Length: 395
Image 1 (cartoon, rainbow, N blue to C red):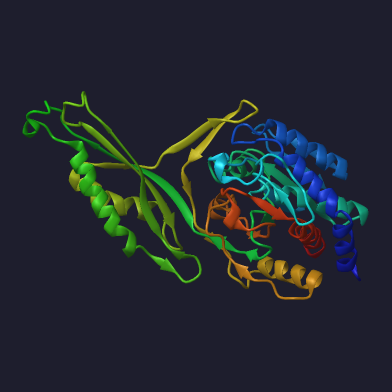
Image 2: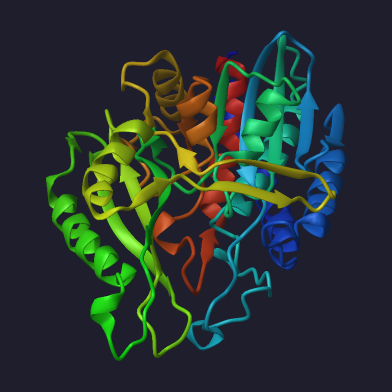
């Protein structure tokens, strides 16, 4: 491994514009959840061009690339679906231009998360150039439907494809820091039934909206009293939607529901979060449900899971966090910042549900995720491709 870090850095820089141009090609393709077919075929083409030993689709439409065939598996993940662009007036450039200048690649998905995919394509090309021959499997996954349901894609890979790596590196944006966890999340629906009556005599009925309103005020009071973790931060709850129903606008409402976004810190679980809301809702006649997500992938396969995304973290002294630190030190001779994401990632099922260790290292600034004027520094793409290749040598 003598001077392997120098060789990796040289090759990552050599492929600087190759990586940027690959990302540009991905960005030019609109790829909302369940509409990833075209971008998945482009990623497959790029992986084949880079010389991966095997590239295939699974039945959900994830792209799986492989170099080597060892029993020990390391996987690098990037979800390929993006959110929509929102109000175009907020953009200073065409979100699907894939424009490249001396500093950035521009457009929707460049940060969240196709920049990571372009970097792992180059990492594979670097390993091939170096005749990588370690007894491991270097796997990359371009995954689908993450924006709609975090971790669904990896639930499929683990439970249906029976893929179980020893380590997964998420390429979600980290500003080239090493991340080791984030809060979990879940969604809840709180339902209230009433009895309708004519609006001229509301005392004859039982207004479901009033029950929901009382519950809403108690949920507001719950938020500041939720648990806190020194690393991950505080749990949170907010009402994101309210729906009501009645026979007429001249009648007492006989149905109301609140939709909750609940962020879970360390020690909080689905059961504990549901119990907190049931304590508020049940005395008012309400029920609490955790929704089930089920949609049809671009391949035509219908697949789903409960909308509970567990909290996860690795300790800073964990062997794979320290492996990431060692890779960073070898490549750039300085200490990395070790931190966490504010948002949720595929780590919720990889680590949170299935206990497979995850670390994060990705190009771009997470502040630009889901925001207008998304762009990723080309320098970040170069360093990310070097990091993923270096990890393969350290694994």
